[in-house]
Length: 287
Image 1: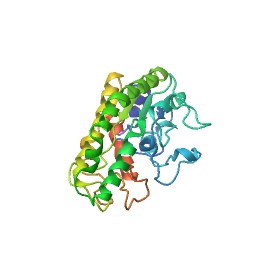
Image 2: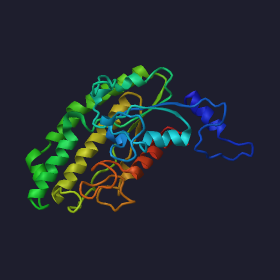
Image 3: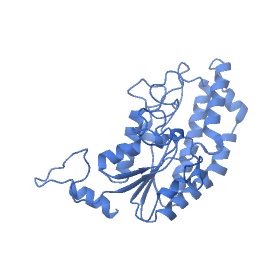
Image 4: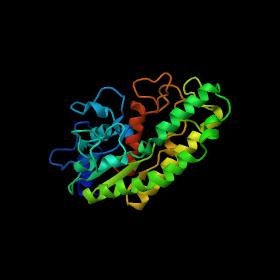
C-alpha cells in the first residue's frame, strides 16, 4: 500500500478509537493521496449534471463522476483528466486540440490511478449498440437480426485489436506512474442477460444475449490487460447485475435510450458512479 494511503487511514482514527467520518478530507498534517483519474465517458460520467467546474466542454466531465466521489470520501488530491469518447490511443496522444495526452497528468509522485477505457476503441461498442437497436426496431423486437447480420465480428475485433491496445495503454500508464496503485474498472452491465425491455431499448429479444456477450468479451479483455500489466481489475459483473437499463429509476446504474434521466443513454447515472467509486475504493483498500 502506498505510504499516503497508510497516512490517510491513520489520520482517520480518533483518540477514542473510533473512525472519524468527514467530507473535509484527511486530518491536519496528513499527506493526502496524489490521485489521477483517467478514462472515457464512464469515468467522466458524461451527461450527469452538474459539469465539473473548469473542465473542457468537449469532455462532458461531471462533478459527480466516480473520481470526484472517491476524492471526496478519501480527501485525496485529485487530478481529473477523464474525457468522454476517449480511446486507448488518447492516453498517449491528444484527443482534442489543446487537450494533452492523458498520461501527461501522471508522475512518479502519483499514488493512485483509476480508469475505465476500451469501450470506444474501434467504435465497436457504440456501433454494435446502434446497429442492434436499429435492427431490433425494424423487426419489432423479434428474432436476433443483429447477431444474424454481424456474427462474431464485434467480439473478434475486441479480442484482436482492443485487447492489445489496452495492454499498450496500461503499460504507458505504468511507465509514467511507476509507484502508483492502478485500478482498472470494468463496464457495468448495460442490458440484462435475457429478455430485454423494448420500451426502453429497441434491441430484439434474441439480440439481448448477443449484446451481453459482447460486453462480457470487452470486460474480459479489460481484466486480462490489467492482469498482464500488474494493475488491479475492478470486476463489476456481479455487482452491476440487476442494475441494467431495464430496471426502474433508483435501481438502474445505466440509463436507457428511451427515458434517460440526467445522463447520456447507455451511460452510468449518478447512482452508478457512486457504486463504481465504492467498488474501486474497496479494490484499492481505501476504506
